[in-house]
Amino acid sequence: MHVKVTSSGSRQYVQLVESFRDPDGKVKKRTVATLGRLDQIAGDLDSVVRGLLKVSGKTVGGLDAPSIQFDPARAFGDLWALNELWNTLGFSGLRKIFRATRHSIHVEACIRAMVFNRLCDPDSKLGVLRWLETVAMPDMPSEGIIHQHLLRSMDALIDHQEEVDAVTATLLRPLIDQDLSIVFYDLTTIRSEGLSQQQGDHRQFGMSKEGIVARQFMLGVVQTADGLPIYHEVFDGNTAETKTLLPTVETVLGRFPSIKRLILVADRGLLSLENLESLKGMQLGSGHPLEFIIAVPGRRYSEFTELLEGFHAQECVDPEKESIGEREWQGLRLIIAHDPARAKDQQGKRQQSIDELTKMADEWTGKLDSQDEGKTFRGRKLSDSGAKARFYHAVCDAHLARIIRIDLKSELFTYDIDEKALSLAKQNDGKLLLITNAQDLSPQEVIDRYKSLADIERGFRVLKSELEIGPVHHRLPERIRAHAAICFMALILYRVMRTRLRASESSLSPERALEVLRRVQRHQIRLDNATDPVTGISTMTLEQADLFKALKIKKPLSAQA
Image 1 (cartoon, rainbow, N blue to C red):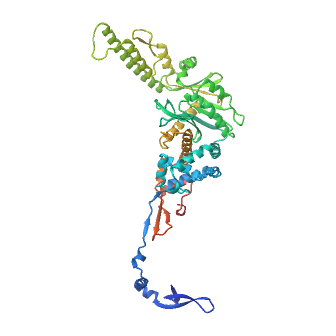
Image 2: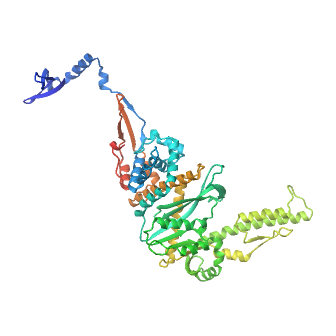
Image 3: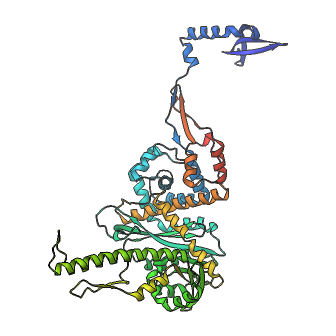
């Protein structure tokens, strides 16, 4: 039985109609009652409805106010954006790799969750589980994920490292300039926790970038001139930097064989004569020789004394003018740049340290002479051997051992200033020495390319701050490498976001953009205790819509939440 509105001319009538079958079994309808004209009974409908509800035993409140249950809101917009980038870039190719394995867990989804967590709210693997309870991860049932699933997914990532690297290289190739690629290589140290020893452990005690001895591993990263990371490698924490350059370059050349010309830019700690000879013999798949721009470490400047003396005498006459020159060294181009402001600052700091040390030494000398004359002082008695040891350590800490000489073999505490070494140090102040085999770049272009290396240092800051790669609490070498690989994938997404935001002239950083998109939330409600909830997303602001456009990804719809 149902209510029907029928028309007769210009008037409409409300009728109560029921369906029935005639003797032949056909369904027909008949009017049970005509309730009246629609325009006349509108005000009486409420009493009719109440009467019908009363007869059926239901209340009016049950009709007017259905029970509504709200599920906790979950962050959605930032994960939607990252998921779209993940798929459009080609990381979705990882699904095919792990689908062919015998893992009962969704490995790709777990890896994707850990990568997104690095960008949205970096935390431990247990913290990832807590984070998943507050977000709506696309294509992933977060309720079924446990801690062991994440760890097993990290193990699977390393077990299939070659296939994963192939997918990553494939998606990166279209983003790299095949005609001329400028790539930058540098290393950083990542602090690691724990004192246990494992076979093949990457955690070794070494000098960190902060200048302290710590248990750590080293992370080498290769980036393009646009800041896009294209390769990473984990090394033991006590590995010499010079030993990491050649294997890294060989791997990069193997992964990107279609690059026609490649110029490698590396910092001071990676220079050795053996490296240079090997680099000069390397060739690309195109047959073009590998080109490089490498800075000379300050400790090696003494090998260029004659060249620097000539440059200093000819090019550094004006104390206020920056100078750039070029010399030949072992068949390579040696580019020399002089910054007078930096030289003045270095000289001032050095002289201040020398003055403080000599003042301290003179006070100790006077005290020792007075003691020899029979005078006494409060406190512990100073000895010549003790003064020599303390002064030697102070000089070494100030990095002035080549200039302030202490005679450790003498019975008495004595020192002197090596004027030749001091003059040589002043000559080297403000100098930048670059070695290159790139013939078509001007000296200024070589310097500009090298100074772009600062962008890779910003990449390391992103790894250490926004992505919080360290300190690392994993014990097993495989887990450490997996952790580094997850952070590397996150850095790729971060850099692609940064590039697209800059191209759209957005003033937002990737961190700020994700923060704005995070306010697009997924909501679920249940009506009258229904089993299936009604899902929707919060209304999108103009700023959020513009961000999706800037990132070149489509906006989410309620049906996709």
